[in-house]
Amino acid sequence: MLLYAIKKAIEKYGFKLYALCVMSNHIHYLIEPKDAEDLPKIMHWLNWYTAMCFNRMLNRTGHFWEKRYHSSGFPTTDTKRALNTLRYIHANPKAAGVQVGFFYDFSDYGVYDRLGDDGLTTWHPAFLSLGETLEECAAKYRGFCKKYRPRPKPETRNHWGSKLLAGIKPKKRSKKSSPGQLSLWEEWEEVTPEILAVADQFVFANAYNPRVAGDILQSCRRPAGGPG
Image 1 (cartoon, helix red, strand yellow):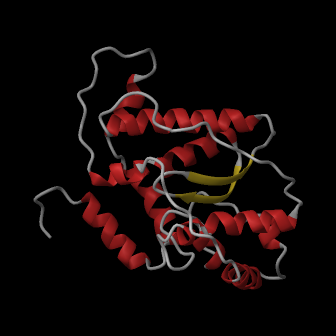
Image 2 (cartoon, rainbow, N blue to C red):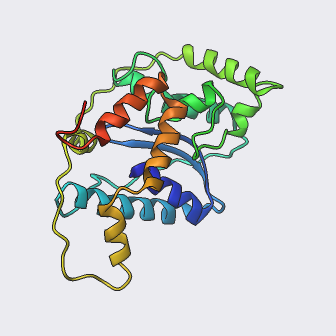
């Protein structure tokens, strides 16, 4: 659902998503809005949409995100900072001890390494400046990432991702609904083929082993008590 929300935000605001990493307690984005003043609108919409969705999935109310987003801007033409930021975001799973390498089902490192299409990511101009061909760019970025020595990052905040994976309980729909909200509730209560397609494309493009990732996705979607 989160990946689908990001796709909807891209379509709504027309920003470029250069890097993404979804951890169990936080998310990293590297984006370029059409206009700088669009950033608060984008983040507000994303946080609102996902909070409403996840609260309903988890049968809870109140604030979902622990803190307001933090952002730091820099020119797209700042190649050094852009590459360091890309690498920092893609190194998060390794720094947290979640992965041994950089491949991670819920980051877009894979499309930089394997030059795939995950349906969300746009290659950063700094990445494209690394070589004369895409293959050369990927090889140099791969080598650049291998030089990174991240510091261990203790995870002390709420692990909302773990809560989601632990199981989702349906919640009875309230009879009261604000005008225009009913379609959103229906959308949040049903995982549509479109939502699944967005998730599949992203995960398969970025997973270290797409076949294993596919097996995991299928097992998550298999009805309880269904055939093995």
